[in-house]
Image (cartoon, rainbow, N blue to C red):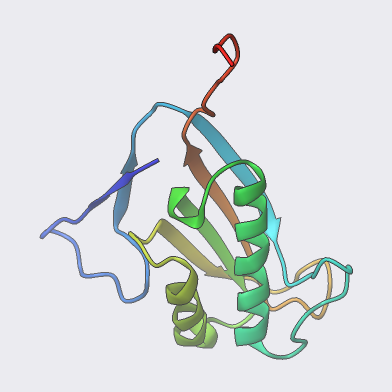
Length: 141
């Protein structure tokens, strides 16, 4: 679903790859993606100690989830990002720009003291607005 970025002159310009606010039409389906970590399809952690490698894996996991539901990364309207070290902000946003190439989603980033696995450096959950699937039921063949 297309989304609209809201920018206010009464707010500071974002210092990363995110929107101040995002409007997504209230048509379609909402997809709530659980927190994605750097666990790859084999269940092992990608990029232990490497925030860029872990961010790539997290973005690939988000992409897999949204695509399985019939959407794209452009359908993601909001992300919440949890990191072990806020000093990684620039590196994380450099990777995010490679995946969120359209209008960036609204975003919150917070530093946390622990994750469920000591090797995780980042976790991202997301909300996407997906178009209704096209229905061919009842259509003549």
